[in-house]
Length: 247
View 1 (spheres, rainbow, N blue to C red):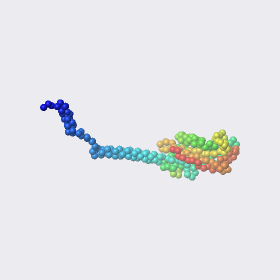
View 2: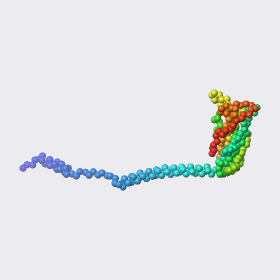
View 3: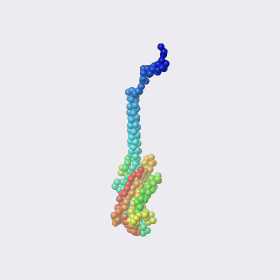
View 4: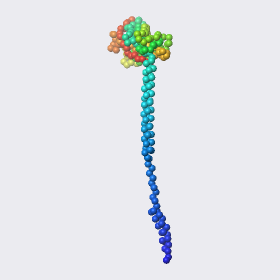
């Protein structure tokens, strides 16, 4: 019996197909995290939240402590200002024949703290002006004068002790401040007493309290303004315009 050559050729191919049919399919492996992995992630997240919260809380506490320390520092120092009753008392404005103005004033300072204040000294300057923007600059100059000189002033104790300064203040006609840029032109003038009380604490640190009094002329306009007139006394009332402990 003759062998069919085609059957010999197909036999190996059939054997390969049968081998592929019986071949075990590849194993698909799915890796999943167990509970320990999930727990690690959760703990890490909680830790991050706790650390962030603690950082915020610690920062807040630091700010509170700094504020309390600042309060303690300011509490352990003298505070000097105008006496509630006497404060500042000033005369009418007197113009002489040359147009120079004069005001006599008395400043009564009080120590409102529980600590002695040294080098206590008060003074004020009369300003006659149409430009209110110049007042703050003048007050800074006055406060610098009463705090820079260590030879000025006296000790002021808490309680009934008071420090009194009595001085005149002059303004020449050439020193009057006119507002030349005003439209329409201004005619009335305003008088201010710009003052300051300077003092030092036990450590020698300088402090000062500034104050400004405005003059309301009795026969002036509705704002208390007035005109310059030679050899005239202008009556009026001095009223506190601003007072603040600058440092």
